[in-house]
Amino acid sequence: MRAVVQRVKNSSVSVDGEIKGSVGKGYNVLLGVMNGDTDAQAELLASKIAKLRVFEDENGKMNKSVLDIGGEILVVSQFTLCADIKKGNRPSFTDSAPPTEADRLYRFFCECLRNNGVSKVETGVFAADMLVEINNDGPVTIVMDTDIWNKN
Image 1 (tube, rainbow, N blue to C red):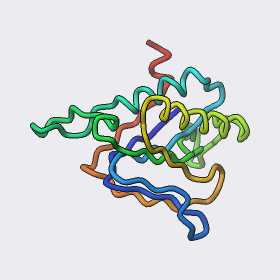
Image 2 (cartoon, helix red, strand yellow):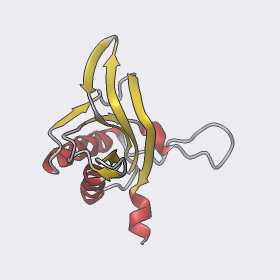
Image 3 (cartoon, rainbow, N blue to C red):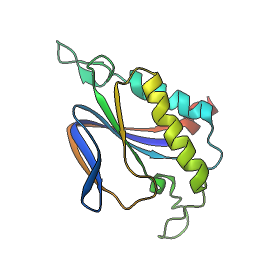
Image 4 (spheres, rainbow, N blue to C red):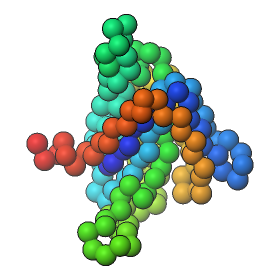
């Protein structure tokens, strides 16, 4: 499972001109679900993101989590994060989980964020052509891949 976590002042996602999800201060999370990803990986990733300390404290240090600031998270499914570009110039998406399983894990991941105490978790529309507006704060962008944790 791969995630691109962006600290945002606000973020929204729309489909056909209609806003489907929006958040204020917090994170925009682009989530890619890979073949073989598990519920345990979704739980671990959600916990890591909820506790990630990239918001400034009173001393200007990145010491606070989205939970500490009462922040919100917009999660957008993005299978292109699973792209394999080792050969040639056209990405292969064969490492992406099948749509039914990817959607299930995407929804489960969002529920895990809520279970970790994130008060507002919004989503895009799975498999839709979406317009994502991200007002990145910092910019602060963290790339996470659960495969790295599995190897250690």
